[in-house]
Amino acid sequence: MPAVAGIEKRVSELEAAETAGAIPTTDCTGARTWIKGQGCGIRFMHDILELSKYSGEYPSIDEIPEALAAQVYLWSRAEVDGGKFGDLARSNRELARHILGLPHGGHF
Image 1: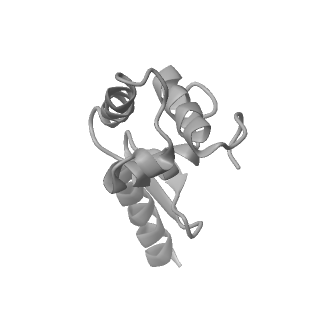
Image 2 (image 1 turned 60 degrees about the horizontal axis):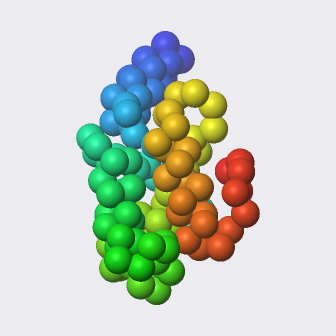
C-alpha cells in the first residue's frame, strides 16, 4: 500500500501544479475544466467591453465570435465564490451569466 499512497500523493501534486492559478469551471457536458492563462480574466472583460463600446450594451451570445462565446459559457459556470479568485473573476462570471440570461449568484 505505501507505493499506492506515494503515487496518489504525486498525482495530487501534479494536479495542483497544473491547475495553480486556474479557475475551476465545467464545460457544456459537465466535465471539470479550468480557465487558464495569465491575465485571462482581464482579457475576457476587455474583449466583451470592446464589443459593447459602440452600442453601449453588452452583446448577445449570438453577436460574440465563437472562441469568445466558448469563454462566456466557461465563465458563466466558473466556481469563483469566496475570496480565492477575487472580484474580477466574480464580475466575469456575473457578466457571462448576464449575456446568457442566467440568474446571478452561486455556481449552478
